[in-house]
Each structure stands twice: as C-alpha cells, then as structure tokens.
Length: 413
Image (tube, rainbow, N blue to C red; front, side, top):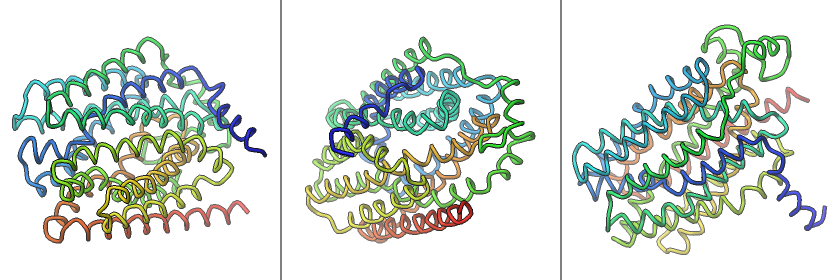
C-alpha cells in the first residue's frame, strides 16, 4: 500500500461511526480543554494549600477510595436505570464540587470537595463506558474508542498550557474553568445522545449466541468468573497504572526540583506535548496495529513505558524531558486504544456498566498506591531512584501481558 492510500485510510478510519460516538467526541474535546485541576493537583496541594509531599502522596492514594464507591454505584445504576441518566447526573454533581472549591479559595476544606468530585466522577465513568460499548460493535468499536480518546487529548493539548499560566496568577480559576467546561460538555450530551441500555429482548437473544459478549445469567461475581482472561489482564495492567500515575505525582515535583518556579510551566508544556503526540500518533498507530492482537500491542506499550519512565531519572535537560515524554506517550496511545477494545469485546452484554466500573478499579489499584509509594520513596531516597523503580514496575507488567498473549495465541492456534 502506497503512502497516499495509507493517509486516505487513516482519514477514513473515523468515517461512518454511530452518531452518539461523534457527539461524545465533541463533548470530550470541550471537557478536555477544561481539565485544569488534576494535572496540577500535586502543586495545588503542596504550593497553594501548603501540604507536604508525603501528605500529598497519602491524599492522592486516598482519592482512589473516594472514587471506588461512586464507580461501583455508577456501574450498577447504569445497568439498572440507564447509561445516559447516570452519566449526566454524575457529571453535573462533579462539576458542582469543583465550583465550590473555586469559591473556597486556599481553604483546608478544598481537599474534601476534591474527594466529592472524584466520587461523583466515579459514578459518571462506568455509564459513559457502557454507553460507548452499547452503540458500537466489533467492526467499529476500536475506531470509536480511538476517536473519543483522541477528543480527550485534542482538548488536553490546550488545557495544561492554560492551567500553567493560571496556577500562580489565579489558582481558583483552575477549579472554575474545569467546572464550566464539564458543565458545557454535559449540556451537549443531554441534547444529542439517546439512552442506549439494552432491553430484555436483546439480552435474551444474546443468551442464545456463543460470542464473547454473550450475556451471563446471575450476578457480578459469576460474570467475572466467566471471564478469567480479563481478570488476569487487569492484574497485569495494574503495574502500568502504577508507572503512569507518577506522571501526575512525581513528574511535577521533579520538574520543580530541577527548574524551580519555571518547573510548573515546564510540566504544563510536557503535558501538552503528551496530548499533541496522542493527537498526531493516535490514528496512525491504530491503523498500523489494528490487525495485531490487542494483547500484543499492550505488551509492546509496556516497553515504551519502561524506557520512558526509567530514563527520566537520568534526565536534567528540557530537551531530554520532552523526548522521554514522547516515548512514554507512544506507550500510552498503544495501551489506551487496545485495552478498552479488549475489555469491551469480552464483556457480557448485561454487565457492561458493572464491568466498566470494576475493571478500571482493578487496573487502577496501581494508580491508587502510586502517590503513597512515590511520596515515601521521594521523601527518603529522592526522585531519581523513584524513576528506576517505576521503570522496573512497567517492565513487570509488560512481561505478564506478553505471557497472557502467548497463552491466548497458543490456544487459538
């Protein structure tokens, strides 16, 4: 295939997708532009509110426990009462919590409302994931997930730059801006996305089939046991989430340690580079790797994580920091565009909301403990040894997924 045909196919990758996918794409772009708080949460807690690195690490680990009940509740409600209702309600409540933070200023109550935001955000995410799975199929699902992921990063390419400019000038507007963008995105969904929850007839017809999305009679525990490969995959992916979480916790601390107050703006530019690389590599990588087994692609992503994060401990120049950002971002793209696809294709039709809640929680365990571990290691040993540990962790995850891929490939052959 020549270069012109390849480029044409890349442009056609997102053609003919279900209308709700395009609506969610535009809503995600709007929301992505306004993601101000979480990329700068470490600096907000340490420099704006005055907490220590260790306390901040403990708090960030505790945020996973705030997300947990919301996610489990959101997944169950999405399967019971509908995806759209749950997604809209959760997003509006989450936005309201950030608006409160903006009005509070540098108050010690701000962390409480950040936790409440995460709880409501936890309600939102499983419903969104289930909705996207409902309106797609095996043929267009990877392209659809890729497009919404692209939309997030199109917005995020601008968000951190704006947040970096606001951080020292008007930090309260990090919260206001985040809340306003999320509210606008939610209004866009309300008017343009229909409810997608499968009805009882669709579930009953699914029980007669023999595909990987076949419904499972019984509760969540029985459904999980019917998909052992997904459970093994989720455990391996936990090592990835531990590694990648340090881009939110350790990286802003590292850039400010190297460059002082200029480090916050540098970190914002690195996050924007992350988003730009996603935008420009996303479609190309999906086209190049779509015929490969998703587990193989995810295992390769771990190698990029290993190199990108481990070498950060030896980086002291801006140029090298940018290069390593590109490296681990390529791993992020390969993982993100294949993980959701692999999970969705193996999820029972009648448990999509609950699976969309449970598997991110299992896979996110590493993300939950990463700030706690990172805070302790950085406090006692410094940030450079932390990056070495992060690289090793990503490598362990990659090896585990390689093994799972070889087992599946052997079984198929």
